[in-house]
Length: 129
Image: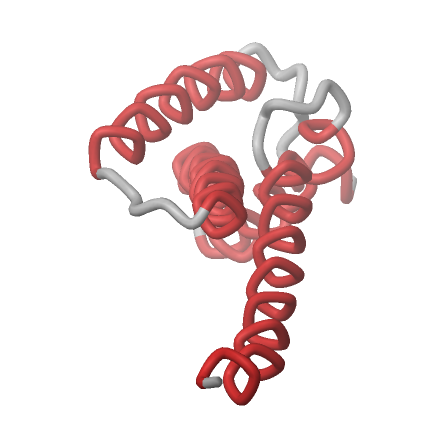
């Protein structure tokens, strides 16, 4: 019977794929804005770390770099979450879903941009002084 010889290999591959997909869902959830705590403890610090070297070169670059870093961390979260769920469900990805993730990420980025613009998130040079 052909099933017996391939079933253990297929099961191991399937278990590895499900484990990898579950890890992607977990990391994606942590990076995505779907959890209430992630911005304060994950995305804003990552965006801040991303923007800090740019602020050392020119203070005016901080906001743009912060927005880019924040946007990328949220987008990465959505993409990893999506890829993980697709892997768990064994479905194909669609560009429409990715486009929706990009729109949501841009919306959250606008909110964070407002926070930096209102100085609710301080510039790095304000913390160093």
